[in-house]
Every structure is written in C-alpha cells, then in structure tokens.
Amino acid sequence: MPAGLRAEELRAFREELAKAHDEFGGVARLNSMEDWLDLIVTVTGSGEVKVDGLTIDGHGAGNKLSFRVGDFDQSDLPEILDALSAIEAEYPVVGRPRTVT
Image (cartoon, rainbow, N blue to C red; front, side):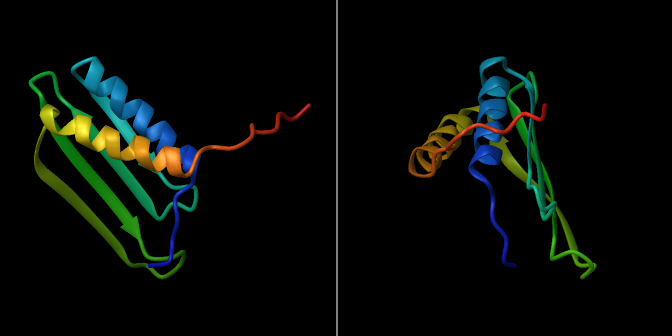
C-alpha cells in the first residue's frame, strides 16, 4: 500500500503517547492526513496498553483492515517513544503552518 506519514503527524502522536505514559493513563492517536491509517493507543491506569487500528487501501478501493494489538504494557512505552524520537530526529518538522488572515 503506497502511503506515507507526515513528520508533524508522528510528532503529535509521540507527544500524546508521552503524556499518556507520564500521566499513567490517556489516549494517543495517529491519524494520517490521507486517512489511510488510524491508530488509537489507550494507556489504562493499571498499566495496560491497548492498540486499535484501521487501515484503508486507497480511496474508493473499499479494502479496510481493522486490528487490535495486545500484550503491551506501560513498560513497553519508553522504547517506543525512543524510536519515535529517533524518527523525528531524522525527519524533523520544518517550518510553521501558515495562518490565514
């Protein structure tokens, strides 16, 4: 499936995931601008991490895959956050969004 993620999408996801980790609970969402990927990570107060996702193969193709990933807990998040930070270091967000006046 030819698709890409924007640097600012990954940064926002990393920030939300870090907040959920630091606050011992919360939700982080990665949603691509083209709507081909929607990933929701829920961190519970008990340390459980739930990952639910939906991916769509192109607009109009009609192919959808929903999935759930288990067997994660809060102790897995630092390594994931480090990996996201490494991606961000390699592909930094450049510039600022334009404001409409």
